[in-house]
Length: 93
Ligand code: HEC
Image 1 (spheres, helix red, strand yellow):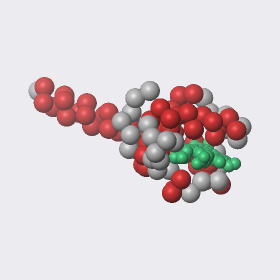
Image 2 (cartoon, rainbow, N blue to C red):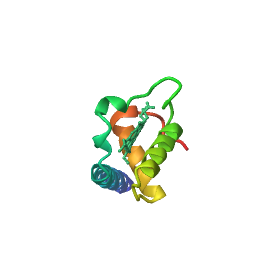
Image 3 (cartoon, protein in one colour):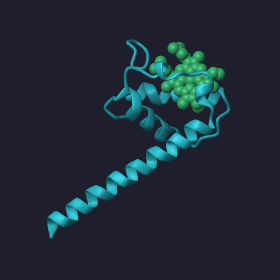
Image 4 (cartoon, helix red, strand yellow):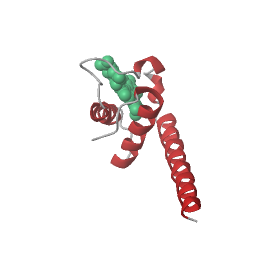
């Protein structure tokens, strides 16, 4: 019984994580971030983006510079999404 609940709750949480990434992907695509960037831009660099926290900062800088109207939590979702795809930092703020 407990095992079943555990399995179901694991499934549900991975589904909601997936939905979150999907929503972030849509935000990211709609904001034309890739008009300036290529995938190669998104990799950890010494002294620049070398932590999840810095990643959230540069994304904020880029969205403000380009008048992208995301809420802060949406921006964080995009950070998680890019981190999941490219940077692979440990997520802490
Ligand atoms: C007008 C061009 C432009 C647009 C549009 C733009 N960026 Fe940027 N972005 C830059 C520049 C320039 C840098 C700084 C590059 C550097 O200093 O290495 C940068 C840096 C970044 C970095 C850090 C890359 C790294 O690892 O060094 C991330 C992440 C990023 N932008 C995300 C975004 C996101 C998300 C969007 C969409 C909201 C976006 N950018 C839209 C120009 C742009």
